[in-house]
Image (tube, rainbow over all chains, first blue to last red; front, top):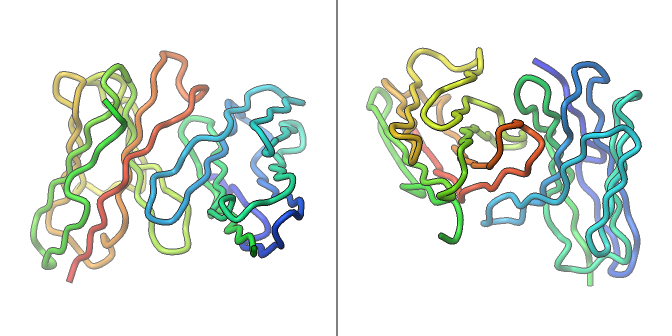
Length: 109
Length: 116
């Protein structure tokens, strides 16, 4: 079983703050890295799929970077809003998908 | 088609009973995944299908678990002789494409199983 770690486990920020989380994964047998956002009582929703070392992707105020050689990805949220409150999951794809335990973000108005 | 659907949303069963869950993927998606999620953990891969073929199965999946995807459309996950440790959220996801893993997955709302 591969180890995918996310940090921090939970985070509380004030509205307007920028924040970032980390996903660490094995640097071998890399195929893809997915980020998902999971709001309470809803289904996980895809944010990004990253495949190449050095990839940077952006969607509105959210962006992500990928370093496959050292085995990490960062997710950034600029100017956090209360609606950003959710659990952010990363998933490492080699032969199958391995999910981290998520970072729970709470944005305080 | 508005997304992936799962049925039932909640299931309470007594230990030793069999349960079956259904997943209807997005209609044009050829890949279908089953995951299990327990409290405080991320989703744990169980199995996946490309069309009707079951291509990968987690080694963690005991022989009490079986999944099917007849005709490459909906899928069922059956758990026989349920145990209390099977209590979890069972998630289904689908995606398109032949190059697996490089396209996002679309998740259903999950089936919450409680074994008493």
